[in-house]
Length: 121
Image 1 (cartoon, rainbow, N blue to C red):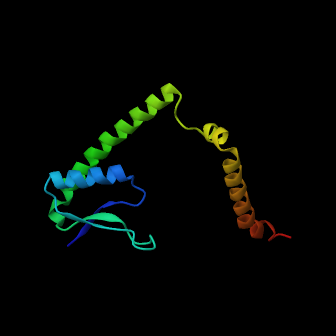
Image 2 (image 1 turned 135 degrees about the vertical axis):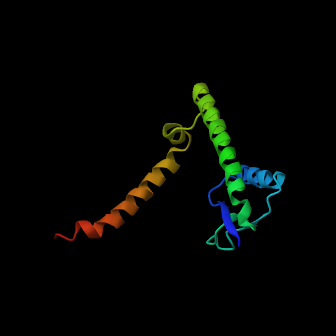
């Protein structure tokens, strides 16, 4: 029976490519499902044979630990060089866009909480 190994929703393309290569290099048979035309299906990597599940999960766990360490190192280097992106960097690059997003969030919050705040009146 097929078993879902690795969900792909929100996963960067380079990480998904690395996972595919990792499974292929270790002769683990898998297939992939997409999000579909409307993006509501489950994009994932599935194993055809669940007897390889523990081995595949161990490989992916090792890969993700290595990737996390690598990404932390990259972030630390950017931070040391002053090139990491913060809220203020984004604000100075595109102030109108940031103000517009904050305005949209405030409007949504207002309309979401208004019915509850007017219950006692």
